[in-house]
Length: 127
Image (tube, rainbow, N blue to C red):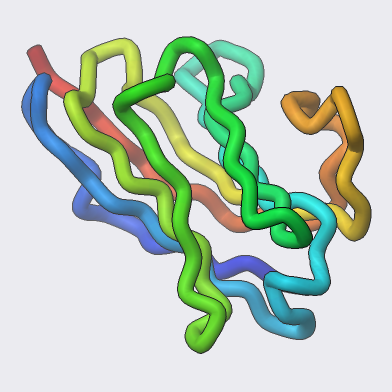
């Protein structure tokens, strides 16, 4: 499996919106156990943002983005989207999509369990 993430287009003012996307190749999204978004600010560890469980078509969100971000997918394009609304300066960072072959039950928010990673997309939110 390979993820190809968009680059650029990530500079917005606080309160604005962006939509990020990652395209998978080598395996369909429906065959994956988990597709999850993380972000990493400069000098910080990778932080869980949102997760998607393809088998149940269910989404999960970190408290910091609940109500503002949403995950969706286009099966025909084998693409996962992260819609980000009401952006805040603290949302700034490099955003990654990640996947693994099985749903990890209660630890889907841990970056170290994911096998496949996209290259990342920079998001900068100014105040």
